[in-house]
Image 1 (cartoon, one colour):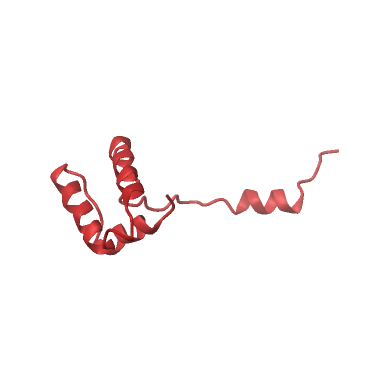
Image 2: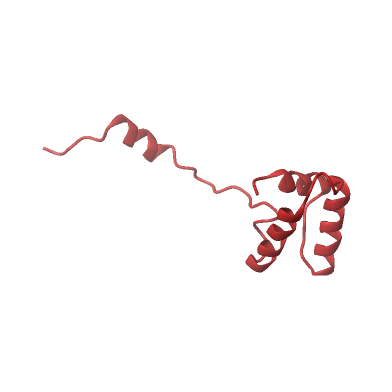
Length: 83
């Protein structure tokens, strides 16, 4: 007699995402760019830097390197993300 799936196994097998969704601007960058930007994020100090000015500087530096970023709000959200 074949073993029947548990309810959890059945739900999980049907609940898999069918589409992976869109990558963020950060995830679309090459790995070396991501590493550099992570170092920039680690260096952010809210006691020293203004968040918006820091993000605008990130966007400007990325542009000079040919990296495409998102708008200022998305870059701020990324900066606020986990470190």
